[in-house]
Length: 267
Image 1 (tube, one colour):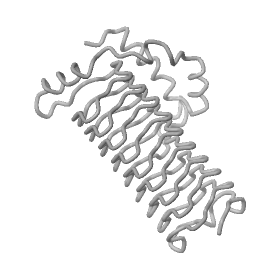
Image 2: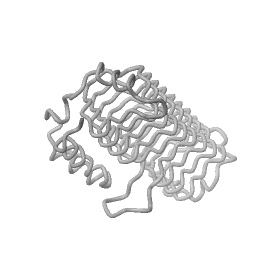
Image 3: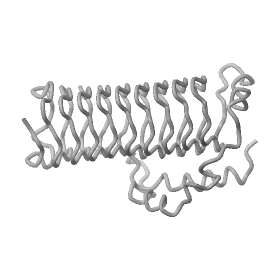
Image 4: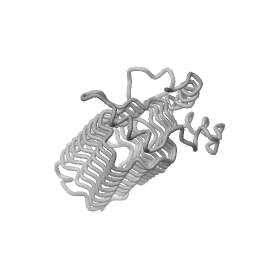
């Protein structure tokens, strides 16, 4: 059972996740990322497996607020599990079944979810810098947190929603932050990237067909060879972005309405 202290610590750490990216980075500088809270686990893989085995049909495993840092939970079926405000820094969930799982305000620095299935999962206010989601299935997922430098290569992000949450901005604008992330070969068909941050990200050969890029920040991003048929560039900032060898360019929408188009690198 989670103690009030454990829940309180997790909630306190999660508080900075609601900040805008700059604010969150300021908070990170004041946190001891090497502290036991951020690096140790209160459970073992066997403990998690026991919770899975004891769960009643249709009742997802509840791991909210738990310290699971550094555990190897690869391959487990944790579909629908509640990881809200959990600490999963350096945790390995490669190949795990996580469809519909809740990772809101979780800490997942350098976590490895490569090849995992996270269809329709919620990652709102999540900190997953330097993580691994390469080859993962995040189709239909809600992704509004800091995923800077995370590897999304060949991931399925079709229908995923990275857009800014305009309902409550009292603690800062929540949106997908994928600065310097690797999205090479990722499937972003019909994804919502409105007002998301992809500065210096790589999207070489990515599938952006019918994606909403409205107001996206993509300064210095590399879109070489990406399929942009039906993608809407209205208000997207493409300052120094590489727009070379784009597929379906004739069917792209509002490219002429992108910001700093004249400063982009084109054919």
